[in-house]
Image (cartoon, rainbow, N blue to C red; front, side, top):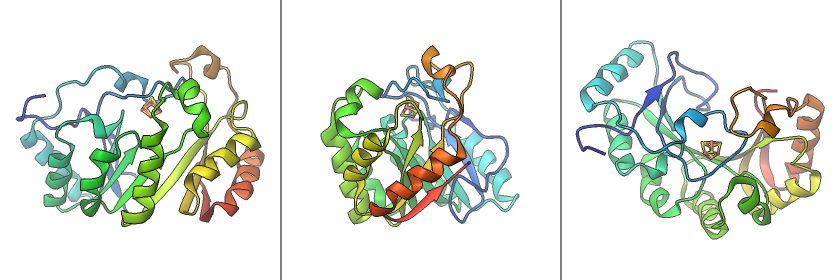
Length: 234
Ligand code: SF4
């Protein structure tokens, strides 16, 4: 990627109140991912990394959002830690006056570690129990997942672990496996799976939306693993 471009490939048009706890935020997308989640909603961002916004263009975007009372910036993907100049982007957004939140799948603790002092909040997806990672998301390096969890618990200013609950896959046993990875967590978020026609796997296109009852049951089950359990988007 050229040093004259940022890793930002796209952005959500309107500010959001739900993606960065306590802040109104602009959401920036990066491209590329090292997982293959069949239920991914951002499948169009999964291919190889693309040329991003130039820094000057991004500066204008930031100015526009700042004028709408936006005080937070969310960097999401794809998987942002794959971008070679992610650190530059975080510093840039802070210089533009934003608090920065990073979304990650936890696959690159080596990239995450030096960024933590610059991030107000990190949301890490914990997709499944450790033995399921290879089959479920095609990522076998579970040691990296364990390291990222430990890193966030020890060093992040604030963080959440979160799981999108797929009714046919996330049995109680699977959720306990996730609990064993994250405990003792400060915050754990459960969110519903929402089917769409353009998911990478046809199997998950046919999966029903997670019911409020299942989300409630999962949130009860996870209370022994986290100080706070939040249901988001039910
Ligand atoms: S980690 Fe996120 S962006 Fe990557 S494939 Fe899975 S859901 Fe999609």
